Each structure stands twice: as C-alpha cells, then as structure tokens.
Length: 126
Image 1: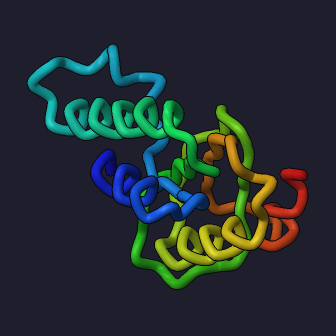
Image 2 (image 1 turned 90 degrees about the vertical axis):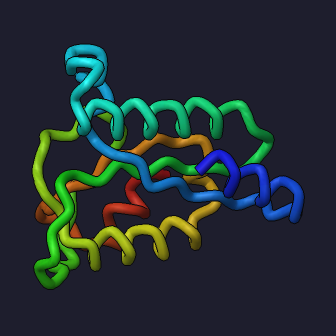
C-alpha cells in the first residue's frame, strides 16, 4: 500500500482510495504472534503512511468480506460503524461512488451491509 501511494505521488495522480479493515481499534489487544493482528497492524501502518502524503485520499474500512451477491444497500460512515459483513461487490460499488465524490478526500470511513442505497450513503457524507 505504501509503494502504491508513493507511485501515485510520482505519477501525480491526486485521488487515492485505500481499502483498509475494520478492527484497527483492537490491534493493540491482539498477541504479537496473532496472524490477524499482524494483518491489522500492517493496515494501520498503511493508513498512517497515507495520511502523511499530499494526496486526495479516502480510507475505506469494510467489514468482513463475503462472496455473496451485492445488495446495493450499506451502512457507511466515520468510525465507529457497528461490526458486520459486506459483499465484495458492494465494496467495489462504494469505491466507484467515492471516486465520483472528491469531497470525500481526507475521510476515514467504515462500511457494512445496511439499509441505505450506495449512492445515497455516499452523497450523505457531504
């Protein structure tokens, strides 16, 4: 993730979306040898790195990913969003919607399945 952000800066691509993970608030409570803990620590480090860069970044923290068909209905907002799951297709659709909303730059958002249509959920961030 850090190398990708560095490449974006070199290529002068301003808009940058980072897919992170929910649960970063509990990373310090997991044992050092815990595999998921290592994953969350790496995600936290990539977020910290991105926040220091001069890019128009948005960080998206989806819940547990599923291969289910997307519903098009989500809960999206700044942390904390209640834990849950989300279809990969819905994550992709939210990312596309966020690309069309440059004023989401500088936001860290969490995402799980919900009741709000994706476009409406993204527009409500304004």
